[in-house]
Image 1 (spheres, helix red, strand yellow):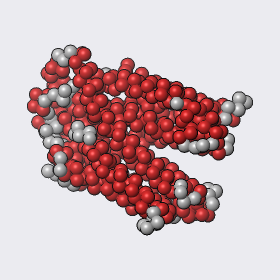
Image 2 (cartoon, one colour):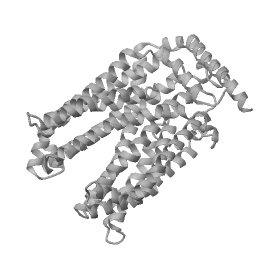
Image 3 (tube, helix red, strand yellow):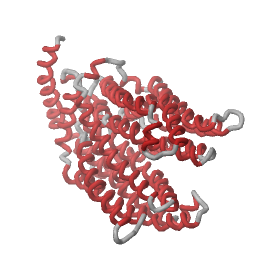
Image 4 (spheres, rainbow, N blue to C red):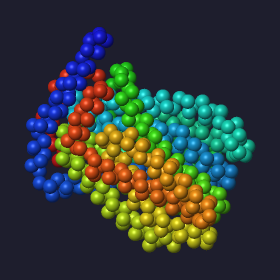
Length: 509
């Protein structure tokens, strides 16, 4: 087909797909409406529970990789621990935050495409776009990391810490691509309903990572010292990537892969249109939390240590609601691809209810353990007492923080990442942070408690705004049409017969 033919076919293809989605919605939504309300709630609750449980475990394991790496480096000295912590923060901001944001766009395209099309390789078509986007995003990072030592010295770091941090980052680069590619492969598999893949791969790699942290960092026989920490991460990154590729090759997920094609670059802006807001939403919230950590250092090492203890609890309690959000993104996207708008709506509402039950339970547990939590990390009484003072504020806000992770999954399924970015900026950067620093440094002199009060205000406002929109403003019937329109705009021309009806594919119930 000539380029001119393709251009002429695009409007007609878009019209056919749009008409197909409208006809599917009109003719077959009644089948979904016949399912009793209580039955639908039970089905969605069970699916979300059984799917999010293994995801939560895998997320917890993946987030503990840095914990074990820093734990092993901490035995080498203060400069080594400071350099590794600084390098980890740089990696999070410059590499992982934009890469994960771009990869999250796959939760919009792949989940709906899997159920909307008979050609399952269309899922792989979108995944190739994700791989391309995260690969391109790494290119400027390589140049920065290779020559970052002088920049760190200009920013006030000591000569030794700058040198060690630069070494860490340059070694880490060898495992950067497989790590960001793993994020794309993970979502490719999840979109096809294979929610345990990540848990299986992580279950194999996690003990290897822990063992390597000992062997390659400070083992008397094989230890390489400081360089062993980034080398351990490199090995684990390649194992995660290789393990997921092997899983795809040996499972039904391979049916979604149609091979590499340069056609994935056609109209790739539609991918970036959702990927960039996803990264922006992560940046607004992630940077706000990091700035609060920086602000706590102003008030001395005791405040910084107590803040670290609280943030460790936050990282722990965040994983389960985030997993529910990822499972909900898959379920809602699959439902929209089948024109099941009622099931998609119930999935979202059930997920929100599950998030509140989990969050309130976690808050009660954390409040009950507030006086003992600090002693899990230190024997310093001052740190433990300040941690106990901060814990009630965190316990009050952590439910809403977890709900932010959950709701973001629902918004990704609906392709509304831009809304999350628009809501997060004023919540954190116009309300939360200015209020927190005013309370901490202003006339009240509340110090780190003031920072937490401001952060809590931002988190709660952001959470309530997102939930209000999902519960009261979403027209789920209209979202089906939006889903099909989005797929038609982002894909190469396809005949409408490539798209499934409910009878031809079947129910996901």
